[in-house]
Length: 285
Image (tube, rainbow, N blue to C red; front, top):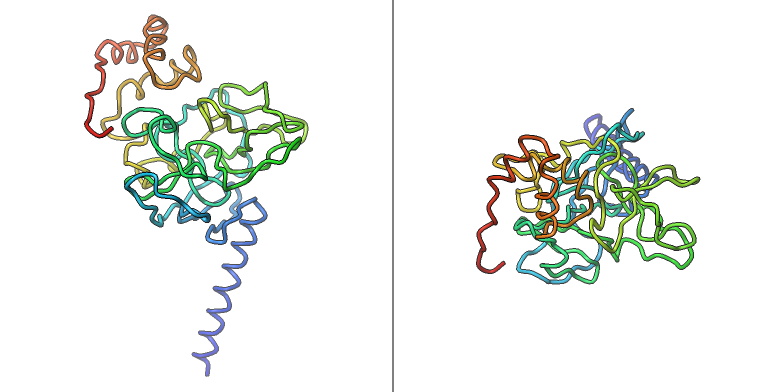
């Protein structure tokens, strides 16, 4: 009898803990029942499979698979004294349905939106099976006219991400280089945009780097930061590039801008630019 009672108690405890975690998820805007949130003194600890809670369509040879993502989102984000570059590739934020946002580039260093198909929800799976968004996800929320977009995700520095619309349903005109601004109701927050950088231009707060570091399984294993053998241009020039050539997608124009300003760059970046060679063209894109 005691064993059965204990087993029932454990099952009940598990149900209560699961319900509590889901209640916390709902309280912090998360909409997918598969997302679990634990509250600590400093963080929202978000556990998600990253699998979409909406229909997905075949737009490339890959299929979405469930992941084991565990993200720490600062509960009380603060503006840092200097911005932090956003990884060009791999996870940079998490949407309220538990799907990750990726940086703007694909593994070839091209703008993903321009070179790869997106489904009707504006997402697609990576070769590793990670389904992700590079821009405003249509199936997370559809904006209403004349209304400010609600929260659609969290950046890894803790600041909330809203959709395309600001006050009175108009696109904000005062976004900084990070794609963020402050208003009287929401304090500092980010907005997605139709143009580059689409989600985040940089982190205005201090990101939890473990969220996109080597321990986290990203889309193609090449997330553009903290990876062995990283592209020297990104490794040494990201801060200088953001300062002198902000919000420019990888392109000939961006490289021309960097070359024009290279005398203002730090020594490691100048060396990387000096040794830069165009990437080898690969068959099949």
